[in-house]
Image (spheres, protein in one colour):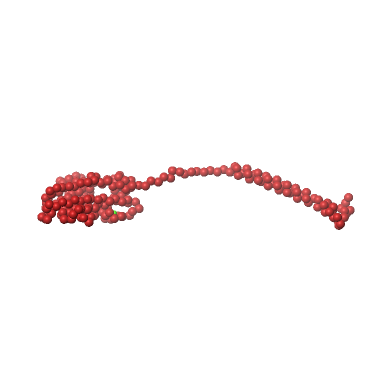
Length: 215
Ligand SMILES: [Ca+2]
């Protein structure tokens, strides 16, 4: 049978099925091929995702500690005391100022007394770098940091200034460093009679503050 013998009208289904018989086969083949490719590709992708090389590195131990500001003055009380003083008498003794913290600090010294009359007659001198801090030798060496009244009820700055930041006279001590300050208190020979029979007690206060980030 040839194509010319097949009616192309009427039932038509035969010629349609015949003429088009090759296309479904080709299309089916392509579909199968495509599915095979997809399956293969899917398989490849699955295998690839399981075989990815990866790595991870943890960086631990990120610890932080804070430093400390710790000023220790020794002796902590009664560094200079005198009783029944007469004009011309003096008392001399050192205070050790120690930086016991882990941060460098600057410090100041103030003096507060419980009265003002005798405190204004007594002369306090504070020196650094004194080789021998006693009544006999305190004047021979070192530098005078302060010389003036013993103090006042309103508190006076003796060395530096306790206000935050750097002021004239503030002294810097590195961590673990220390220095001696020599204190001398004298009742001058010219003290007036109104200074008799009085008692004055002074409190010396050291204030320390970090120097880091604190100009
Ligand atoms: Ca200061």
